[in-house]
Picture 1 (cartoon, rainbow, N blue to C red):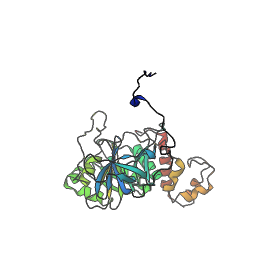
Picture 2 (picture 1 turned 30 degrees about the vertical axis):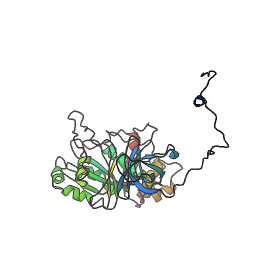
Picture 3 (picture 1 turned 90 degrees about the vertical axis):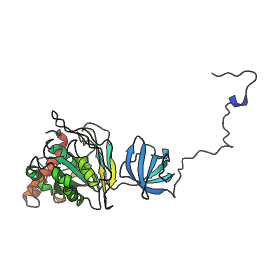
Picture 4 (picture 1 turned 60 degrees about the horizontal axis):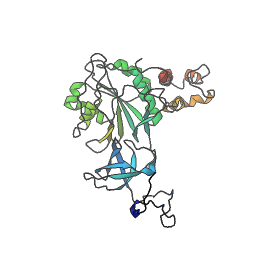
Length: 336
């Protein structure tokens, strides 16, 4: 406890503020009606790089947003210094409502949900046909996350010079997923990038895939003026690649008609946050058949009405098999 002598200095005395003479506190937050609109391009240790009127602006989240976090792809409102010059900082004061959200958890027992990207239209699932071997269960999990989050899936199969894509494509044929097959010579010549770019026109596309499949190499070919570090290699023992992308980054296509979001390589794609009842919405040919299902039907039990719906010829049996395979993917490990 601090004690004062006989000759105290005024600067040493801590006087309680006079409520009448100070501005009263309020819970009313400023509206920031003059805030500029922007898009989050990347997030790095609390600093967010945003695109505002064609300029890249460094910003931080305003305290008034509380725990609400902005992620790559978010449409935000900013105030402060929006010049984009060095050592300037703006504030994000609003995060607009999201049209879609790609989420994942570390594993199926992890309660912590991670938002990978917001407002993407499409999810490009990149997998190699060899070196490393394809992991169908990981593809299935990405598909479930895409359907749940409101994104349209796109399969991008790389390294077709090492293995044929026919078997893998056959297993997803009933889902009618668009796909692009590439090989390494096409990447060097630019032909592969042109064919993939045709699927990205006018869209925001998030690229996901486990390490070593060539995802970032493909992104570099799509956006050559903004090269990403691609020094990773596939481990000969584990078959896993070294991570070459450490944070999600949104990059504009050269013609300005779309965006590519490069994400870090994943080794697992947890679905703890997924409500299985929402996956059926991605199967419009099967959804009407669920009207006769019992309450809380898992769509993979003896009383499921979908069996009779398909038997009556309303949908292809392969579609029902695909639905049930996706619904069961949470019960399996990605390496199965």
